[in-house]
Amino acid sequence: MNVCGGDDGLAVESAAQRSDGIVLAGTGAGHVSAAAAAAAQRAVADGIPVVFTSRCADGLTLAGTYGGPGSETELLRAGLVRSRFLNPAKARLRLLFGLSAGLEPDELFPSTEKGAS
Image (tube, rainbow, N blue to C red; front, side, top):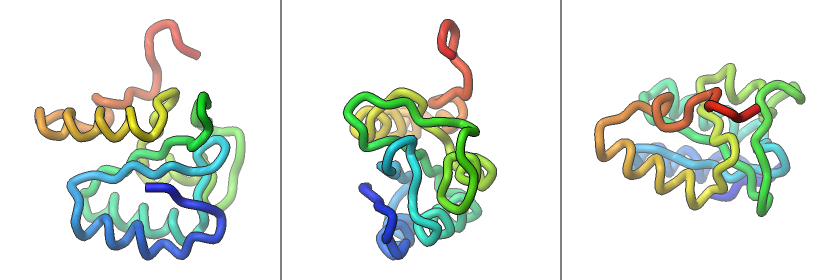
């Protein structure tokens, strides 16, 4: 789901009530609003895997460059999983098929990959 800077988090809350997993398409490096981040953190606490991606056509989600509410640093600290290089559609498919196969989000989206920086 696309999220933006002014997002109130209600769409994330609604998705968490109806989904087995959520993929957030954030801005730039995968950033979301503070309200969307809080809603995503509650979803993770309820056992719903949440993956954050970038809406950029070809962009890597960051892992520790920025701080503050909704930043990749805070999202990771809250238990969200970063898609790294996958766009939202590819991350959604990986999450969908992976969960169907009984895999954990950390297995589907490893924090480090061979040959990647």
